[in-house]
Image (cartoon, rainbow, N blue to C red; front, side, top):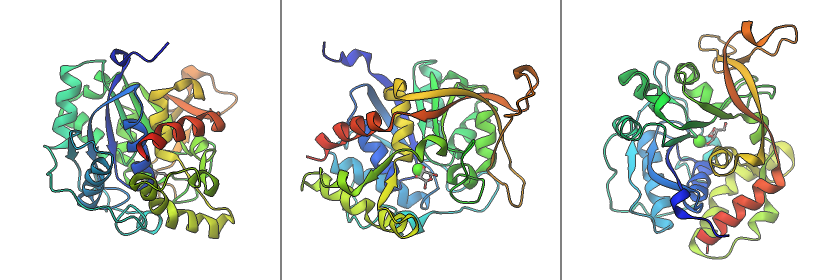
Amino acid sequence: MGFDPSDSRPVILDADPGVDDALAIMLALGSPELDVLGICTVSGNVPLDIGTGNALKVLALLGRDEVPVYPGAEGPLRKEAVYATEVHGPGGLGDSALPLPGRSPAGDAVSFMIETLSTRPREVTLIAVGPLTNLALAEAQAPGVLKKAREVCVMGGAVDEPGNVTPVAEFNFFADPDAARQVLRSGASVTLAPLDVTHRVALEASHLAQLPASPAGVFVREAVRPAMDLIGRVQNRHRIYLHDPLAVGLAIDPSVFGFETVFADVETEGILTAGQVVADRRSFSKDGNRKGLPVNCAMGVDAGRFLALFLSRILPSAV
Ligand code: BDR
Ligand code: CA
């Protein structure tokens, strides 16, 4: 039986594009299970204006100019902005050179989130693949609004896995630890894709060979090249981790993942530990008296199934 489009889940994608953010946008738009209401942008991998331009560029490439883009926070709640241009390139999309389309972004991300979640309570899934600043600002302006999301799927944090930007912190949580903490403590139905799963799924050179020589296929190859070279130099293997597409995968098909409830909080002050997920994994504690709040964490993934899904969804848009 075919997929019934009326079963499509309305989603808001909040991103800091970013190479893997661009792949997450391609996956979301290529997936009939999702109805992307809008893309919000946030300071993260690159400054806000560059990330917003990148969202517009990718949408134009895909012929999806009808999807609105809403710029959000220009920096984290409390700390100085940190960027990841050494991974994503100064323009955020690797070696690609997409033209910036003429259309302007729509209104403000935080207002869009508040309005959409409030008018459609428990219907809309928020997928957040950058620092969580926009979500925290929405919650501060409209307390309880994140609980109106059907689910908040987040790429962020590291539970049992080492960090990727410091020994213990993952980039999105490190970039705005206060926001991450506030979102986890908001009482919203949060599902996390931490590094524990995103480090298990990588796009390799052999996958790139499957991409057609179309504009979108060329874009993917050029966008991922510098990050693949960087990982190749460090790990002796050319690949990039599919961090952000995995958070989109949580909304498309949760059966690809294995989940655990983890009692967790986020360190906001530590000189060495800012952005660390502090998970209460003490074997002698009972759930009732663990520190932190219960968070549904994807801790396992069927990498082969996810990659097959990912490629089948981005390949048609790469034709
Ligand atoms: C996360 O950090 C960013 O660089 C990626 O886009 C992803 O969202 C991985 O730690
Ligand atoms: Ca990202």
